[in-house]
Length: 454
Image 1 (cartoon, rainbow, N blue to C red):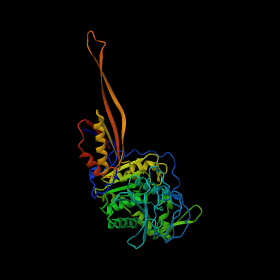
Image 2 (image 1 turned 30 degrees about the horizontal axis):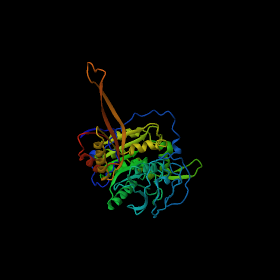
Image 3 (image 1 turned 90 degrees about the vertical axis):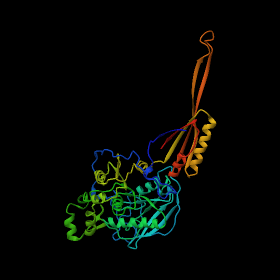
Image 4 (image 1 turned 30 degrees about the vertical axis):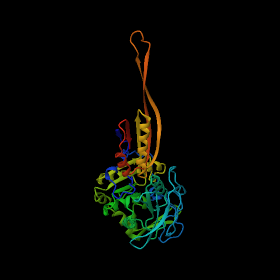
């Protein structure tokens, strides 16, 4: 069997090995597209910082009731109505399309609402998407956002379409979870994330990766620096310089005001109070040392930072700082993307969960030989629960050779010889480590040429 292998893109970062407790690190690598791109110059002026939250949310008055005092805005980062302060207990099963999915290939996956107690006894409400993998990916939302934000839902759709189970939840004081909303609260949210991971560990479910957007990006970085039990971390538009932008948001005299009154009330354009920044919460924000956290991350932990080039909420320069201080790090700058990747959701999904596919092309001079080889490959793939597409017959290549019958009297008489090369194409979707091992052990006839592309 002649085999030639060309790799167009290695298996993605979030590639899961279903049924494998300890996947081989050799097949877990970043796609080559995840290389740092040059930063684009900002052509447009940034919107006024005081009207935006860290999630880029326009200030809006609080609506609804909850346990946090004061409540954050009930209008999420995408303008959708969000719930605050109520911990649900029901189990729901809905297709992803009902959550506003824009992915045409999203699968209908069962969803279960789960309530987890944190260390303070508060209920953390989340939704588990069962897409087929035993290990899960935990999604963390940003500041004044929730598990139902458009960015989180788009990530959930992208990952579940690749048969990756995910869990999205609300931090304490946000969304449906109990607790009091606070401006800083980074290490409290790290503790919430730790309780979530421990909950699934007790139920024999491992956490394959943690993904955080905006403030959630800071949370996953801090988690990786404190706990060395997760080896894949994705930071989406996280903030490195914690002091940047505070003066624009609260006024340059914010320290004098907070020392005088003990708090700063953040208002919207109508004068309504959205949330209160206490001196304690502000100090918690300012004292959060992201540089120290980056240098404390285990070198075996692989960190991916994705940032929009046109992000005016958290400047893209912060992504370069993460790249400078994290040893095992990959950086990807999405051109023309803003903080919420509003027009780049599909591009963001392709970065995090590129299509998992092995393409096999077979060539042979004899049809029964190539058909038998195709049957063996498909059977080997199906035994590992991988999907197959094909075999697809490709056009047969014909090479005709003309030979003179005789150079003298019969020079006009000629023989025509023909060689036909038959071709077949097979795509193996969602391959696992067992799939690759099974294919490598196949014994195909010497008369079949096999070309494999990952």
